[in-house]
Image 1 (cartoon, rainbow, N blue to C red):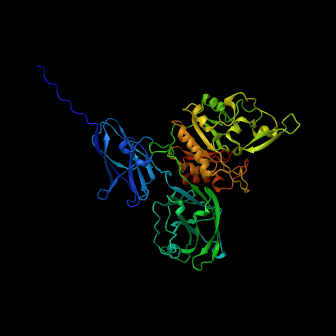
Image 2 (cartoon, one colour; image 1 turned 180 degrees about the vertical axis):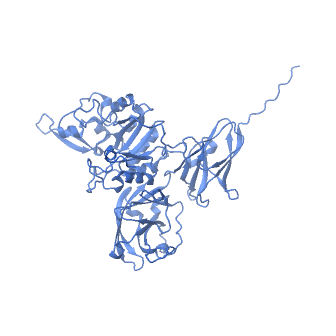
Image 3 (spheres, rainbow, N blue to C red; image 1 turned 90 degrees about the horizontal axis):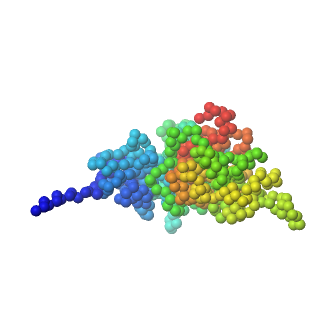
Length: 569
């Protein structure tokens, strides 16, 4: 008789695993710790399926026991989030962003105790991005307060407090504005207020929670107040002004000088300026005015980001001396000789890539039908033909934004240099890849994926004389969303760096997505170009401070200012 075959032990394909992490500097009553990862049990990096952990007060640990597979390596990250109990939306405050996530190997048998943000001898923590919440930024600059003479020389603290709008029968009065009570006002659920002053001091240049009596504003300061909220239309904003008396003791609170209110219907969709009266806190009479700018950053409607990886603050130490193809193979209209290939075309980008470029830089605008196209100048020229004349002798300059993609690609358009000199520099109408106005999507699909893209978002700037490079009808949120949607959908594994001369665009791109880095372009001190009005654009130190306050990767500096003073930090 044959011997019975020995029973094979059933292979365990899964096991129970306790995730545990210690998180310093967290308020368990307002914020929670979540875990996410690459398996279905961990939500597959989807921020809407992120797993909330439980806080154990005795051990000061955040814990969660889950079933994980034994058939593969489990990757995971932790995040600090706010949970909106009314809608169950999760707002990501901070999350772990080391390029490589934490790993549970198949051979590991016992869980480890983690420390938030620290593993593999590295520390990587980044702020979250806008998922279902909105960012309102108040910008106080160019000495915004004009007060009566007795207050004109005094240092003033500025505080912005979001308050709920009440439409019931009883009027609601914000008590913190009518007294000098030293207790903080409780913010509405899910609302976060952070403040930064652009200065060389990192303690005030980085965004920090707003203090009880706000932030001091000094002459020529740039003060930014960021309010993040899930319900922007349900909030008004109380702006209080405080001043410390020279005769007061160090522990005495400041005097409440005055206040003003900002209602949500005062805001345009994306950006603007407001000048409002300041009311005296004692006599409730006009005390002066305050002038400030604002920026509204809305989340992208489509869910295009996850928690798998972020390059927003990542730059490989080996990336030095990179070859960057400016507008592809280079600007082709600077001199009459120029390049043999027209700038910002598929042909120029391909030739630069074939020549060994590590990155390709190009400018992106929107056509009239809101399709991102690659082109540098805000204007193009179209040839006009007079009646009874055979030759086209006049050129009409039109903004790129006023022409649809079909018009841009099918009409005979000329570069401004050609239009003003009435001299055609390129005879390439029959070569498809040499045509101007390729779409951003076409470039992402046509160029070798191993070549990175530096995508410059082309946006109008206000000059120091109050004029604009272009009166742009597009809403800023819409413009940024259209560009980001194309990149997030079609970039794949390509390296992407966003850049812009407009600091508000940089703030938007940084807060609307979490995957790609953003660089602030700056001319700095210049004799070659007309300066911009925004103080954040006027020098290299100001650009650095702006980049720090907006949590950008860095800045890109024009060589003129570097050559003027190579010792600049």
